[in-house]
Length: 328
Image (cartoon, rainbow, N blue to C red; front, side):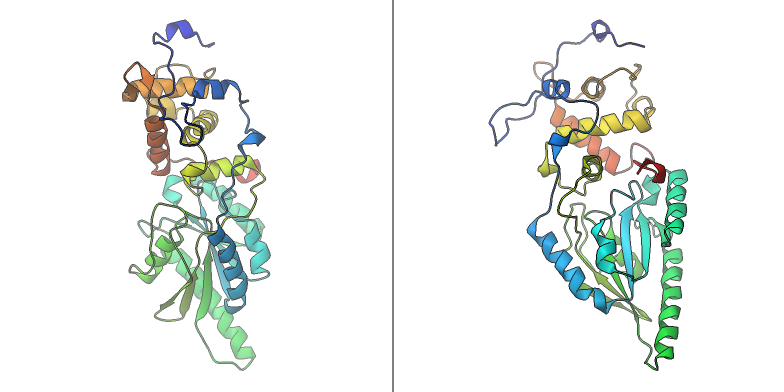
């Protein structure tokens, strides 16, 4: 069905975002949308690599010789995009276990596709929900097997048995500290919903035969693929302040329209055919349904965008996986 703007039965809506401190003017989102193609534009150039991340990379390289296994935490909703491509270069030939955290927020069928994908790459993997502990026993069993391998290796060299040393790595906001807390059984590392909240080096010694080295979240210096950068922005692994939150939300609407369009009917009760609608038009309908309207019939895009991203990150839009092994 072609869109017919005469049937929208509402006035033209302008952005209500407060003036930017950078240029001191109100941004017109509709004008922005008209100037963009439906693909990820190269002029977005989303990158976030603060100084502490450079130090973290140096720290990983410095300590990698001390560990036996690397535990890489990724977000199950975007396992490829949330995996730092520098990690494999840094860990060399060490065994790696990939942990797909937040599996409860991802499409289970697609998560299984990723599990199979890692098998073909020679990596062990585990699905985890760090909030409930689901999948933790399977992960611990995998680490226990690694401990047995270590004992055999040490015994063959006539060396004393010691704890398995595991380095936990990952980009910001994938849940590294939450998983460590689950393994330890008590709060042992600061956690939060903001990227980069874990600071410094933390060795966590457990009873038995396991020692964990927690490291702060680290991205890579230049994100070439801007579709990857956008997914990181959706998930909160790149700070919202790096780009306009309204831009992130509009791009998320485009993604959702492509991969799970029924969300707009099920979650936002839209009774329109959205197939030919632009993201900004869909946003307007959501705003009217939710009452995100300011005086003068202006859509409160900032409130709308904040709400949409919060609901997506919290899983309130349903189980969503942004990519599959075939799509990378």
